[in-house]
Length: 348
Image (cartoon, rainbow, N blue to C red; front, side):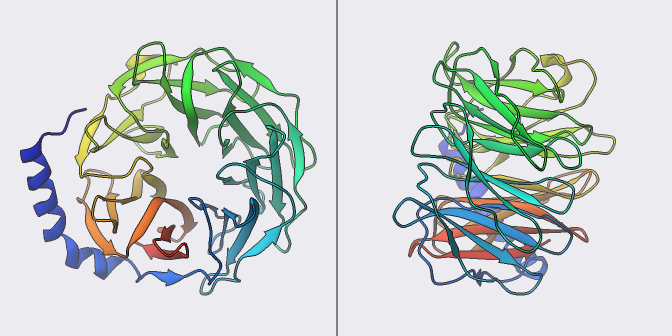
């Protein structure tokens, strides 16, 4: 996972050449409201055609927003003190769960039930970075974070309450990036401290954790994105930035939980921020968004056979985007601009 200067110029040229097709397929960037937010957003789609997003607002508050298919409601404050970026996930039963690190060092979460947001509920635990949440089965969401001893700690929200925390011993740095495999399990990636910059993965079956497996590569990212893929090519695909700042992806093909069940890292090029976000367009197809070195939002789509290449959507952005599937072979991606205000786009 290395990028050299000559590769950089080739990639930038290729990305610029693909600009017109991106504008044809993706909407322009739309304002999500005038409220200033202080973190990367996290978005989820509770039902087809709608999306909700959460972010950390001024005064260490959690702010939330809803897209009804055409317009944003505007940001609303959920009372409570938060200390990390949020992570939102659909529960596959018409709701969305958004979890965050609270001021006591544990996980707190709010639930959107299709109409209203709940108050923040303290789920407990002790975590060092933001959680990462993903659906297990209908009505159940798993939230995972790095614990104070360097491994994973996790809890399941079943629609009513949070389960006791389960831990997986390990030595990782930064927050995990988790995604559903579409079959009742969740896969999480993190950066190892045992073998510096090496990427490790673990799978939660719905009841227990597997051991960590080393899936190779070298990454300095702390924003992994794992997304259900489906189809003939694999179960889910995970994205990470290399130590050379290019984008790479690795696909878990299913079967036995082992390093050999991964395809290995493949390069997509680019000079990107550490938090590319991907979402499933349709079975076997993905769309990914990233903020590149020019501070603009760029997108790349996997059509089931190949990646279309990076295409520039524009904007002057900071941080990392968040993408979620909204049905109808469409994805919504949100990102925060240099002025602290969020925008969104829908495609491809």
